[in-house]
Length: 210
Image (tube, rainbow, N blue to C red):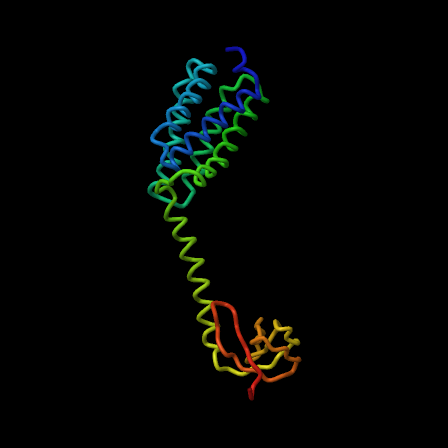
């Protein structure tokens, strides 16, 4: 088991342990990732058993893992998860036999956590951090809908072309500039135009009088 004292091996063990444990929280892996991850982390703490401090160090890790789970499942703002990861890093750095080993082990844990979302691309996801994802999606949709609504209000309004349309250009309506596209026609600048229709954020114009 001497190879477990090689710094690069410590890095790899912590990377895989965290990758799999975090992956178990993110995707439906039927417990397989969790079991393998626990085997890796158990081997790390068993080899680097620090005697009297062992329970304290192990408690730090378990508490950190629990914080990450609680944040992802119930709180959904990431704050407790960050605290949990910090506790986990401290727990693996303290028993490390050398400074280099500790730095690489802590780095391996962080890298594993950062790589774990890759499992979401190939496996069905669990309901972890779903509120954050939903909030981001709703904010994006609301922002898009708000812009679309503003643009829809331009239908029928007249403006002036600021640049030539070939067939895309810029128009001025009520002192505001908008990117727009003509209905297939090339229009010079300083020409009066009307907004015919709006498709999402695409403004279609035509020359007034046509």
